[in-house]
Length: 497
Image (cartoon, rainbow, N blue to C red; front, side, top):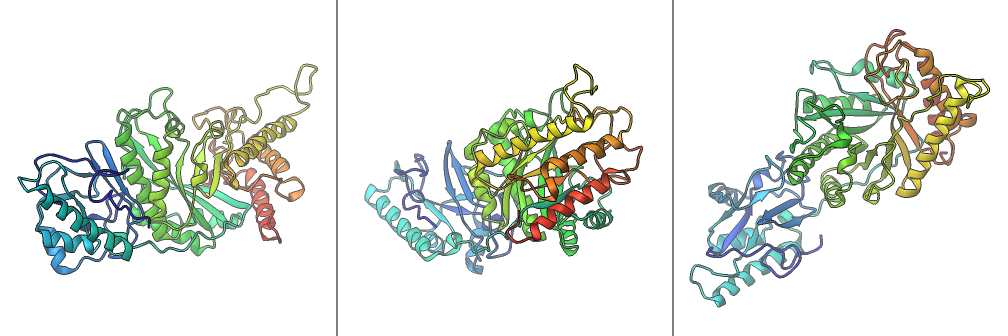
């Protein structure tokens, strides 16, 4: 880890903490029992922990790459007796306070040298102590911190984690939203049918809900969010069936306005929103690691928040400290080209709810297309062009994180609109996916620039009268089987695509 020679023990360099007057020489001690989190989860000694971020008076000190250390008994007892001053705080709620204390000099040096604490000495006034004594204490603690860093002790122990498994593109996947309201119900039958359909990947979608479009908190858990153990168990169940797993957390709005959705979020306190969102995604990273997911999606279609480049990069860094799999982000199909943090990820993803055919008449002198199938193919060719554009701007392999058509009248023009309530149209859904296969898998082989897709979605009972996205019990199911089979066959052939 890169040393922070002065940032820990006094001002004068980037990242250093500001001086505060009339304070004793104080030891900044991380509340070690709570160190396991961006998300406030404790961990066992030696397990990966989230980067520590300290804030005071608007100045920030980031310590990336930290691990939760083992705390010897006597030092733990001393730490437990320290009284929090309230002057310092974590960036993430629930992670426990940083404790700023008047500690004995010897204990302070011992903790700092063990890598179990960070020292900051005031530079203005030191309760009447001479500047020479202050400088000696500053130097003493700074030297102890340098020894801890150079030796990789405690907080400065590097995280050793294997790199992500190769993705083996093209990806043949299906989206499975974890929407069961009864959390005791598992996803065994859905996973079994997804595997039987020919999928080799499943995208598990986990929802949280902020209250309004302008809310500044992303809750860790809501009534829509499955319990931790259900998420872990579902990842493991998918793996037991031979499926690889992407975990995709999604933010919805509990009380949206007429034009509100997650792409228009406008939190009143943007900093607070990011703190809570960091906590939520880091918590999902813990579950992805514990369950064995291959890919974690850092977000989905958060268009109004995507310009906050530094926040996204910090989030990616935080997640990588606790999760060794691949990272992606799911951009909206009409809002991906200006995303400033693609290079912090391993895979570029976009949703594919293209308006594949808005025409209603065909074959006439003034009609654009001879028939519906020609219109659909033209729509999907536009979608392919956008996917190739994503590959060009990101420099990464590209996939569709979601591509779906509900089986309802009007869906070919507005496949993103899950509120459509016309007549059921399972044949329109089938023809849309057949056209998709014609464009993206000509001759049964993935076309250039197409790294695969998660077909959306396999949720609900389905049937010919159903108007949702699932192909279950509809003609589109066999088209999905063809698409997934051809993608997987291409993956298995030498050279992939």
